[in-house]
Image 1 (cartoon, rainbow, N blue to C red):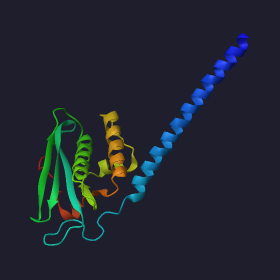
Image 2: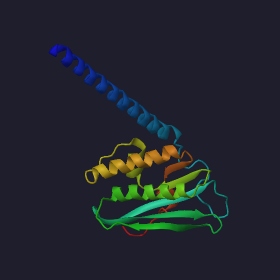
Image 3: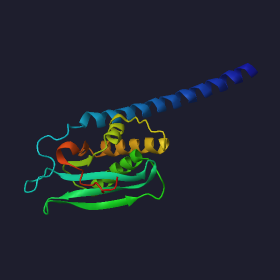
Length: 192
């Protein structure tokens, strides 16, 4: 009789574990589908004239983001600008400063996240492009993997959040600013 109770309890525990494992597998499948959705909808940078040329119409909204640090790690911040088609100039949307020291790549991800926040808040339904000059941060977002040695958990969380926002807002694209062709990114603060 004791044996039957133990077997029954063990079976119930195993069934519970199996159900939880199925939920975990479904969650992983959803996350993988979201990640594949982000990768599948990326467009090659600079198709035609998509950066602003004075006097020419712009296709969608354009944002540029950049960061600065005083040391690496060090105090730093981020700057977000948006192209104003009527004036033909980039206008500062936000300048953010941290009170704690972090790495340059941390601040580059903050800048991208703030750019996304402003793009989403614009409620613009057409195409929105956010330019960053950080090959490293864009690569981390694209792959979902980073090689950071500081702020590891926070950087992982920021990358996941950025990718989630991109999946939820399929009209927003992150692109690399072509510094070699276009000069410094408009969000550059001049602080190196």
